[in-house]
Image 1: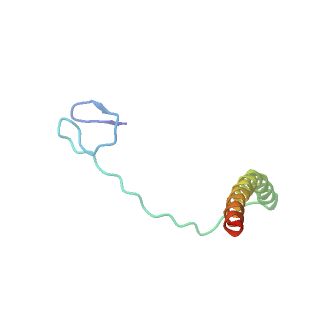
Image 2 (image 1 turned 45 degrees about the horizontal axis):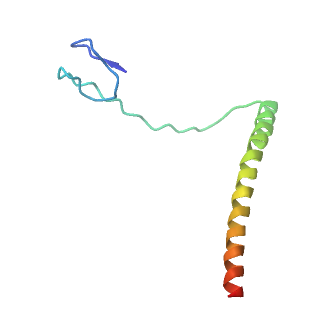
Length: 83
């Protein structure tokens, strides 16, 4: 939401120009480079434990998808061999 300094109307969409003709300044992002992360050892360990628990559902979903693809490929190849 942007408020026009000329007419005082609030623009709900992110246009660069108001209906009265005022041009909103564009905000350009600057690149960010992370050079170092300082964490305590036990904080890093706890982060890794949480990361591991978060990966378990993702691995289950991937295993289900792979099993489904293998069933499809197995059915197709079996039907091709038997015909």
